[in-house]
Image 1: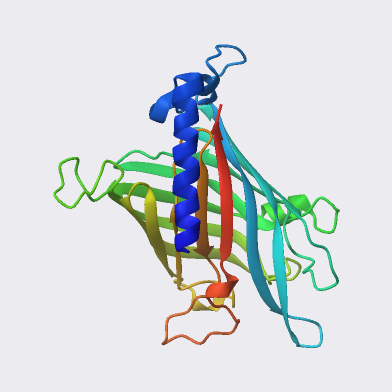
Image 2: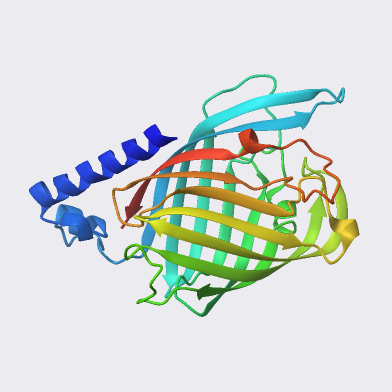
Length: 287
């Protein structure tokens, strides 16, 4: 882990040096217009941003013979966030697996999508619709049926540290807190085929602590008012850490563990540990 952190720092230092030497953009370069010094093609409008990713995670599941299978997934991802009006955005994530074998789960998604108002500012609401179902390009799942299985959400963002807080180590230090509510019209089994119920509500709160120089730790807790709607992969909590610089041409690193984490007083029906989280290297861009 220390080696990864050092590599990221060195690469971003090199990127800043290149920007200062060749583009005069320096450490403040935020968009591709700042980097390449061009006014064409709507550059520098902050209308489009995203990343190109290299990811890895281990997926543990039971096959048809109830045998535990560990599938090591790695591949490429492409994320694009397009602002339609002010902070109202369309978000798309595409995935291409680089390994193919007989143990690959059939439900892995090629596409996630979301639309809504995503506001990063202090004391603001975000709201919209997100879909993380097994949307696949091979036609094995019905795209329109899957639309009923996404969720609508409302969240509120609050910064805990003021500008002159004595606990801030640098200008990036901050604690973000965000309570949320989600409503899912229809939910299915893990394979996205059998409908298990309707009208699922999830309450929760997430938090991210940016410690120093864009390094962060994060976590979230979840509560399900209707206990019968809880399925084995629903988490009681999630956690992660990483390095994130929002500006263009920055290399970022993250780890996140988002499924099947249970508090000790709840039964754990699905195998999940630290190795089942996702490791990701991302190269960011802002149009």
